[in-house]
Image (cartoon, rainbow, N blue to C red; front, side, top):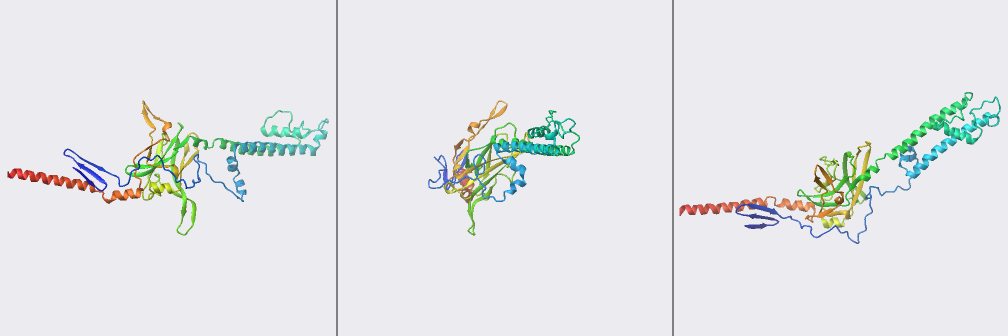
Length: 396
């Protein structure tokens, strides 16, 4: 017996009962990707695919604020400018103290009487600015050739020697520290953290979900890895205020702890499209007309250094594929699991309702017990028929 009622189909057989439920929304078929409206202007990215923020700060008048945090300013400079400043600081420091040593020798008369017998100069064999500059380098770098040496009858030279030694140590600590921090910055670690080229929308566990994939190429793992996502789009408030880059949190598990990742193999991050989701009322057709950007941020500590690493990426509205799932990349080999990164960005098409998650949930709530009620009615009818037959047979 085959019976139909609205969107549900159930079938009764003599030996078994099978029930199938048809989705209340049309299914996605023969569609390769979301096609943006040709007349729609492409959205300017807020965050590039490689994680760089597409924001430039202009007309900054209070530039002195950069000097208040000089160390961070030096670390954030480009490498060629960092090398230039590194070299310039040392050369200027050596020239400055070389000038002071030459000035002491000039005031004491060492440049004129240095070669006379019985004359005790402040610094032996210092007879020109070049020799004073070389003595400054030897003093600060502790090379110690031994040809030029300070004498004990020069108190001003002893004081200058102490000052140069202290300031030289400070310069070394600051410049070497800047270069060390710049070299050990975890920015390069983010280069081995991968995000899928596209995000997808499909049904998972009877719920509409937005998904994207993340992976780590290194054998050393990211400790305490966590992930979050934000929706960037323009918004018009009820008062008429226009917000061009309004940020809305996308729940990818921070209330359940699913945002904490054990990133040993590639993971598919899922956002359930429910009543609290900004995509709750978006159908496939509506999403084609929307302009938005999804920014995803992966954070964690580098296992080797303990420094915090952050990797970013983004998905424009044209990079969200409706009706697709990610191709599996993990396979079980002999004694280990193998990840095939050739399929990391690959997706395949799957049947997915084209309506919004709200419409899908509403249709499913309309008659949640219809298959069961229809089944019970049919069973009751069959039971009555059998009882009538048994009664007739008994009477006969």
